[in-house]
Amino acid sequence: MGKALTNHKSKYDDTSFEIPTEGLTDEQRTLCLEVFKNYIDVQKNHCLGYQVNQRMDYKEDVEFFLNCHVNNVGDPFINGNYTLSSKQMEKAVLNYYAKLWNAKVPHEPQDMESFWGYVLSMGSTEGNFYGLWNARDYLAGRKLVADEVQEKFRHTSYLHPKYIENKPHAYKPVAFFSQDTHYSIIKALRVLNIPTFSEIGHTDYPGQNPLDTDGNWLNNKEVPSIYGSSGPGSIDVDKLAILVEFFAERNYPIIICCNYGSTFKGAYDDVEEIQNKLMPIFEKYGLVNRDVNYIDLDEEGNEIVKVDKRNGYWIHVDGALGASYMPFIEMAYKKKLINQRGPIFDFRLPIVNSIVMSGHKWPGAPCPCGIFMTKVKYQLFPPADPEYIASPDTTFAGSRNGFSPIIMWNHLAKHSYDTQMQQALYCEELTRYAEDQLNTVKDCHPNIELFIERTPLALTIRFRKPIKPIINKYSLSCESLKVHGDVRHYVHIYIMPSTSKEIIDKLVDELKQDGTFENDGVSMLLDERSSQMDVLIK
Ligand SMILES: Cc1ncc(COP(=O)(O)O)c(C=O)c1O
Image (cartoon, rainbow, N blue to C red; front, side, top):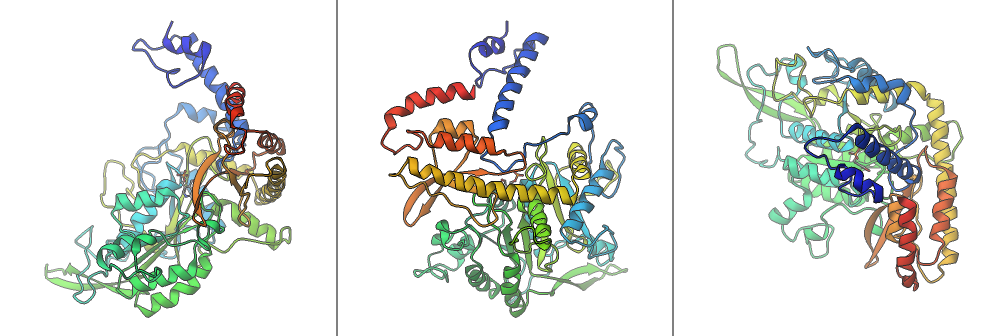
């Protein structure tokens, strides 16, 4: 009998699924799957800590595709030689989100204002990578698809703009993002070698940080959020403007990553206010429609200077959760079904260059997926032109998950705008309920500050970190924040369409027990409590 089976008799742990060289028998394998299924089933029904919708009914509709390799390699709008693709569905999904985000539809390669995008094989992480790559190369003056369509440049596929003597930074983009930004942005900047404002400030302009009394850039590695860690989590636009002006004045092109539904607090950056405050700065320092000069060759092979017009800024909206959820809150607001809405974040704002969302968050999907979207006029010219796939290599990955577009298409086809609006209202109401219920926990722990907080219109509530068994049971995510000089350890819950009142009540009941929070003076109960909970999560 294999080790896996022996282990499962007692406990499910890291070694439970080890595969011996001879493989497992059908019986062993089935048992492993059964054990895992039970585990996932229990955890799924208790999952409160992450913004993933666990309500799904895809099985019957899509199980056929699990035994096919569907691959959307290449551009979504151009079928390649690999014919087992779901590009027709991908295009429909993209059209859906383009309309939802007020982009110009349909995608038309000749129409510079129309949208372009693709369904991600990863989630918003990939979209953030792609958006920042697009931003970097656009601002660095690299070749765009538009240049090719308009036959601006004939002889090269990877352009380098002419160095400008009195503007040495003209093609060196600098990135700005708030302290509430998802770690994927920081990782993408590192991979793409895009410096942050703080890094450039620290090395090239020491002592000149306009936000710090000592001018120290290390005190602002990110743009502050409103009221810092103790605030709601949205970016402080006034402080952003001060920082941006410092770099715009020195001719740096500007990349700004906005959050639309920040990870921990669920905060919405006010992208419209960013537009209002920053456009005058961009105008003032020549970052709107600036000339980008290149050397090209004429028919005889002589060097000639050609000019392209491009903006010197890129605004990327990381709408992992908010970009798919908040449009339905706006619809409800217009119908007077709710009395507030979030700030506008989409292509209605001319300043917006790219948007991403995760398909496994608000819609719900069995695997990570999402959307990246921009406009044709900003689209990168692909670095390579592989004849092998017969479709332009315009996306991040080569092989692309063809299953996700099927899932997303099926979901959208089954959920009308009206249904999604009702779901959004349900979640909003349930979040208010959860906040009220969490507030009742305070009475049971009168000597402990529970820090129960909710950012307006966020689907998440944060509160003091409880003991580990509760974190495990409800898959709670943790974050430590420095608030008024003290480090506070938080967790949060997210209310999604799959969340029920019952599970909130269950969590609240457990939080009311003695020994739930580590310093409530009853730590001797912890061990006893842990073993009870261990039994529960098995
Ligand atoms: C604001 C934000 N951006 C990006 C991501 C990464 O998204 P994904 O997990 O889909 O890659 C998340 C995930 O929670 C997020 O909250």
